Length: 413
Ligand SMILES: Nc1ncnc2c1ncn2[C@@H]1O[C@H](COP(=O)(O)OP(=O)(O)O)[C@@H](O)[C@H]1O
Ligand SMILES: [Mg+2]
Image (cartoon, rainbow, N blue to C red; front, side, top):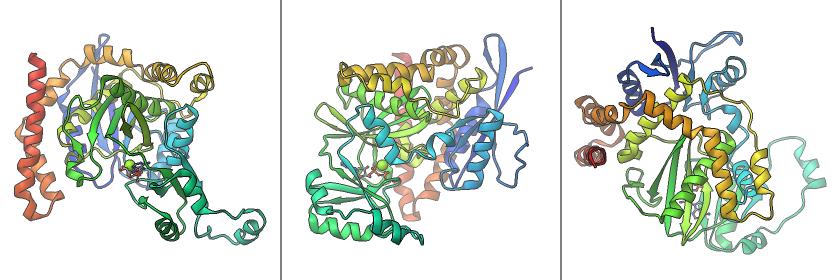
């Protein structure tokens, strides 16, 4: 008898990737690891009242919902604290870690986050106590003076950002004053703009990282660029290391990271995205990689019973960060080693070789299948207005066919 591991999905509006993930989990079949047979099952989790003492049936939960919906978030906390369920991601590790905290965490480690200031709200918090506190303790400040110190152009963006909401590029003092006025009750950062050569976005799922060339100026369907070898190998390694370091440090296992590359320097700007967009229409060519890796990581965590800690442990990183005798590169190499240890990269690779040798081909076969094409067409027609279907269906088909072709070529090379 195979041991069954139930993977729960906490979902919002998305239908595309969950259907693909469910299909792949069903197709992977019983897997054998160290002589024991295991099976993966999936279930979409429904939300309702729950007894805090109830025992959930899941081994692992993938969450795309708790960042805005608190009922599932509180359920996730319960199952993390009481039932040792493996969570992608664990809400304890990101609830207090908005963009601001993520900047602070990585600044201490010496990463090249551009100069960033936190600015008090334009409109104060609604609280009876505010007037008294502010009159006594808030110091007046000269916003244009801070901006001059940072230098123009600069970005004003919410301290807890996400999805580009409220992000503006500011060229001069008049714009600064206008944007600050509009910021209202949102707490904002001012950040030096990086004049970059390449925007590299990485997606890290467990022990694997994919680095993709990204063009933020393009429409959603065309932001991820199909490009290989667009970074010098050392820079590619650095971008990958930053993505894994961020995740290992904060214990996020499903996250994306935005870095701006200028010359041979890498500036991370946005990497607290622990509920990353993995839709087919955004990732296109890279979508099968994401599904395959998610499947492998879920299999690894459940079958090997990888333990999830509720808390972070930043001390080992600080031990390197605080050393004056180590250069940036040496620190990165040390962090990289800590990250690989955290993700059990070697054990993961061995597990994939032993238990999942058929998965790469299985995913290629599925992406080539009629069933996948039907889903692709359904997703594209649901996403784009009718007059664009004729253009976008072949567009996406072409990108996924190219991925299949590249995989087949790599397999026979
Ligand atoms: N310091 C910066 N230098 C250059 N471009 C930036 C900078 N900060 C933000 N941007 C641009 O603005 C976009 C949105 O900012 P980001 O920090 O990613 O916010 P969000 O969390 O809303 O995605 C980025 O993808 C990038 O294109
Ligand atoms: Mg961003």
